[in-house]
Image 1 (cartoon, helix red, strand yellow):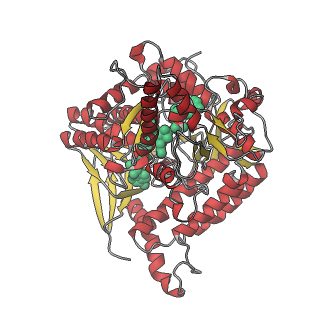
Image 2 (cartoon, helix red, strand yellow):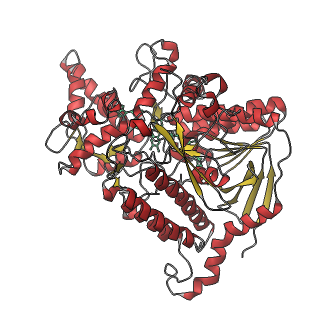
Image 3 (cartoon, helix red, strand yellow):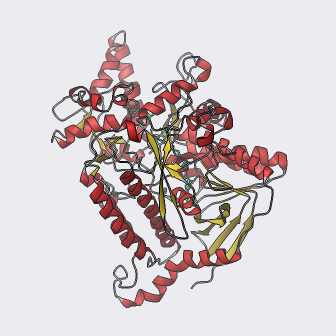
Amino acid sequence: MADFQTVVVETDLLICGGGMAACGAAVEASYWAKKHGLKVTLVDKAAMDRSGAVAMGLSAINQYVDLNSGNNTVKDYCDYVRNDLMGITREDLVASIARHVDSTVHLFEKWGLPIWKDENGNYVHEGRWQLMINGESYKVIVAEAAKNALAEAGGQYFERVFITHPLMDGNKCVGAIGFSVRENKVYVFKAKATLAAMGGAVHVFKPRSTGEGFGRSWYPPFNSGASAFFTIYAGAEMTCQEVRFIPVRFKDAYGPVGAWFLLFKSIATNAYGEDYMKTNAAELEKWAPYGKVKPTPANIRNWLMMLDVMDGKSPIYMQTADAIKRIAESAPDEKAAQKKLKELEAEAWEDFLDMTISQAILWAAHNVEPEKKPSEIMACDPYFIGSHSGASGAWVSGPEDLQTPATKDEYFWGYTNMTTVDGLFAAGDASGASSHKFSSGSFTEGRIAGKSAIAYILDHNQAPNVDQGQVEALKAEILKPLDTFEKFKGATTDPEVNPHYIRPKQFMFRLQKLMDEYAGGVSAQFKTNDKLLERALELLAFLKEDSANLAAQNLHELMRAWECVHRMYQAEAHVRSVLFREETRWPGYYFRADKPQMDNENWLAFCNCKYDRNTGEWTMIKRPVKYITQ
Ligand code: SFD
Ligand code: AMP
């Protein structure tokens, strides 16, 4: 084995990840840490300026409650989220973020993020909860604030260090271990409290993209299930692992649709010009009460579209030209209409250039003029993202002051956003059952978790007890794929094919094929059943056996190997949870053909799970849904 130096870093708070939630945690925790002489350390597998989901920038801030306007309340936001998730939500967590998110958005603006303003100087809303931004440099601006805050409080950040596992002292998390993706170094972070904020997971399922386009997915390929693995391995109770998210996007380059539906008030139709939201409206009754609410939940919107796709009425089109024409025609005269048309055209392109540059390139390549002809949209592949319209993540404590007598025993255990593992916190995509936080809410939840983790440290201010034997064993396990490759690479002439090992890319294909065909991926039209899921578990068990034989040629591939392992655990938690929930609640995300209906009597409940790293056993747990607002 190549010589690897072990670098030990001692800190009070460790923030794993460098995305929106992690940056929020760094800003807030640094403030409190400085007051109390504590140290905050942040570790990102990439470079914070362009890491995570916001790497390419964003064109909207999707959570702004606008409490000052008097038009919206925290309860309104809770209602919106509860309905969109078909009743399954932790309102205490949603409210915890909603009551603070506006202040986060004001900070972003102060730090230099351009938010669109109208002629009266008011923010331009995309929809009720969304603001339009010039967000190409969104992540750079947020990362700068996080780095400044860390520097001011004597904190530290590490980039290009990939976190693999938590370090455990019984049921207490005492830090994390990982490796540099650039140098032969293993990093051991010893911490009094640790925050998991390493985003969600993509490429667990087979994506639609193939060949050179393979890395293109809606969700960023750099987020590969590290948060889920970290919390699962630590023994934390997980929630909503069945709630995958499948967004509708412009076809093949995954450009956003929100601005079209909400700002431009566009409709989408099937190939024959029918508005599927109208022609398939009878279906809404089946999923009542949620099918009947406004706005229609994201999964139901998907479902009405998918019904047409399954009926052979593709392609599906966003009617961009009609929408632009309609708005331009509302101008007072022809000259004003022409001016408006030009503005709308520019806004349509900017929407992509701010957030999904590849979609603008594809439009250009296909000679698309949105003001002249419609553009294809489609449902993407399944993603695990607790911060958008999915809900998967760790089960965390809510704040005490938002509990009711009925929720306190269920949803509160001392420190806001702490998982069921002592000293381990989660935020953003890493924390579950609090959907629709998006970029601004994830940053806000990071702030809440960061502050709470500092409070935990002040109450438990003992040096972490890190067992050196555990560190050595993990170090050997982490580096094993490099050894495996070196040992066996000569056994065949083609390094891809070898009887002794499996390369990460092939391993990923195998996982994706399995999930696609058995757990309701794209090729299965998002449909599955109990028998397919049971078979998926059998195949996952074989895959897990083979994960011991992953091989890596270099540090980059070593990262790929561990990404595979992380994704595999996310996959297993998902399959077990879809199997456990004996109903279909989110058609449009997945459909259990053997249980084709929603069963509110038995399943208006959380489906939680827990893994025991010593025995390899999973426990499934049903927890009650209790709202804090009526
Ligand atoms: O419209 C490790 N999101 C949008 N939010 C908005 O507010 N407005 C939008 O316009 C949004 N759109 C959008 C969005 C997401 C994506 C992918 C697209 C478009 C194309 C959602 C937000 O981006 C999302 O909610 C937040 O970013 C979530 O924050 P967080 O912190 O949970 O995840 P992150 O920002 O991706 O950061 C993850 C970090 O973890 C690092 N990491 N570090 C160390 N070790 C490991 N093993 C690690 N694995 C990962 C990453 O490098 C990163 O720093 S719209 O289309 O919906
Ligand atoms: P998207 O671009 O699809 O991520 O959407 C951005 C925001 O707009 C998210 O908050 C979505 O939930 C919301 N949104 C998108 N499309 C619609 C729609 N047709 N009706 C209501 N809300 C939508």
